[in-house]
Length: 102
Length: 401
Image (cartoon, rainbow over all chains, first blue to last red; front, top):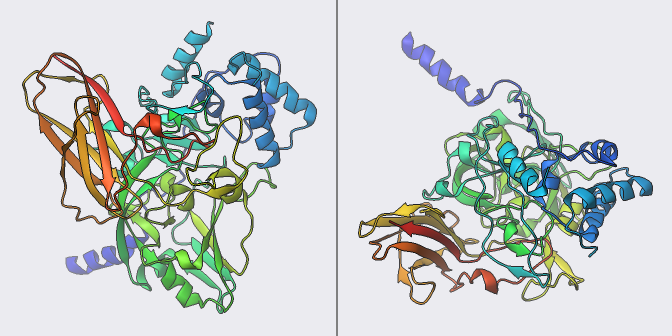
């Protein structure tokens, strides 16, 4: 009888996943700079990705950040208006900029 | 708060230190960042790893893990592209659709995949094309990985070729598009799809449901992912839900714009003048990483120390790994493992020596593959705008006490 139970278990086992319930991806609190334009950043950027993406780039030029915002619009189809794109660029350059335009 | 302090805080909070000031603008390469600590937050089925983002999750494996041929599942790096990853998949209901130019459309359950097809295994390195991107200056946009966006596992699954044979590829079909189930926040964002030419399908290309003898961890693509040994990981689609056979190559974002390098011989360009023609990154180049010791470690004078690490390439196989303890003036061969995991896996290397002098000691490792390709010095690597394919000679500096 024991043997039978074991066989039954083996037969089922390939279908048993290691995780049998919903996983929870933890929330990581990245420190963010609150400043002019932050609300726009929050609604337009953080919709798709964490603030970690921004911090991880290090301090960059205005052209770098402008290019990043454009990439999100052109390739990832983020619905960011021209006006908002400028606000985001200014925010990024002010807080994560290296002082250089190019 | 001072900027410096702010960044320090960022490092503590997220475990992902930001970069300092940018270097010269000419387009140079140097050793990748190596001072990031693992986060204090563990992600599902993972030990705490170097954490760049929670949404989508981006986790890097710390250096010390690269002393063994197989990377433990709970320390294997994680990289997703879209914010919305399915967080629950019922293995009893999950299916992979095979459609397009096939004689018979299929919906393959996990049970069928495991029982109705020949089961095969391959040990292979999975490496992000942007691994070590932090080596590039000026900053190549993208995640500023250190050297841990890679791992090696024993993958078990079914040959993609066998699945296509079952479906019956129609005459004239040339391409197949493999889609992952991660979703963007916006409907119009392109899906994460990798296109493969049917000629690329050799017997090593598999749909894997197991990694190192266990289910794939959720964050590594549970329940099934594509395995293309020798090729960068942007091609190894996770959580595959659909395979479409077609006679057309569709220009899709991730292959045409994201994971591309200059289509010239040096695969290089300058920040001011980007090369106009690009090609997708594909086969991996030869690379090695020292797992032990790590930067800042202390070794004891005149006491036997063993340097350990891993080496790999795009499938030609590793011929040798050499160690230099004098800044690259002389090189001495390390001992390689048997290589029984095959040509797509890590070859571990070890090198025993006695530190003879007190103070700082620089250790360098240089791999050569069976095609005679040798790792260049970091400074000899040419810049590209995506920061891809860095394979500079790894250098760690220890202190002999």
